[in-house]
Image (cartoon, rainbow, N blue to C red; front, top):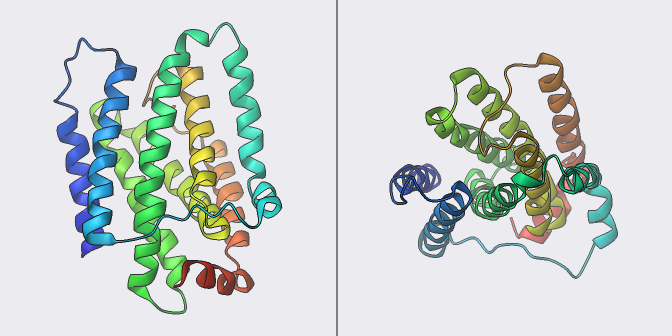
Length: 240
């Protein structure tokens, strides 16, 4: 109940924050301030309700984290290439604003708070997998808020893609016990999308091959990262 209530409160805050700032303000400024407000609300909810300690483990497993984040390095290379391309540099400020604010807020809330809380809540032999799926489903559903800015089909595609990518970011967080890694992946992924498109929310229409590729890549990696022989280590590091 606390899990769903926390999610609903944050979603309502996102909706209400859209009406706070004047339409004449730069979009990059508005998005940054909106995400700061929602992040503060999430921090308060975590402090008083969810009470999850955010993992920031820099002391162990750096080489392991580097290997687990191989997709991040490919996306980061692409993002840097786009940032250096004069054709896209007019979108640089918007891309940085969206990517930084969304990555920090969404990873703090969905992976840092809701994911471990869900695992503790279900507390059975399948708790890790259930927690990963539940937090990723909520992450995917949260993108339906973009219906106010774009048509239904690309919004549904965005939600489905967010769910699949959410599985991967959850797996990265659980394996590394460090929220910086999913934040980095989230940042590079959003940065590349925004700087190449010049818009903060718009997603292309259905491309079955691309969606299937996302399913195979991130779904497959998530299943491999969270295989049974790794779950004992995860439980020990997070004290599940």
